[in-house]
Picture: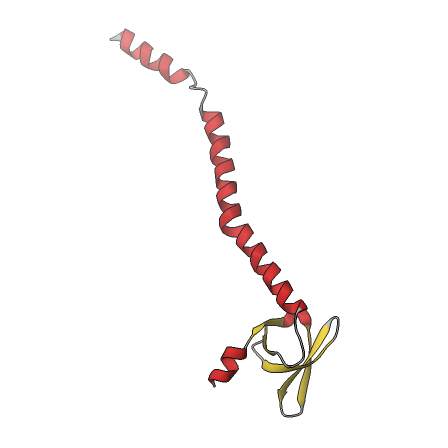
Length: 108
C-alpha cells in the first residue's frame, strides 16, 4: 500500500514539461483570433470611412454623427458646409460626416 502512495506522490511531483509551452501556444492563438475577428475588421472600416470622407463632393446627401441629414453645398480641406433645409447651412468637420444617405432621403 505504501508503494502505491509513494508512486502517486512521485508522479504528481514530476512536471510534464508541456504546461509552459501550451500556455504560450494558447496565448498566441488567442491573440491571432482577436486580431482576425476584432482588429482587422475595425481597420478595414476605418479605411473605408476615410476613403468616403475624402471623396465627398458638392451635392452628396449625407448623415452626420449627430444624426443630421443634409446635402453638401461646399467642401473644404477640413470641413464641409451642409444644407439642412432651405437656406439653413451648417458647417461640420469632415470627421463628423458618417455615411451617404442617398437611399435614406429618397425613401421619405
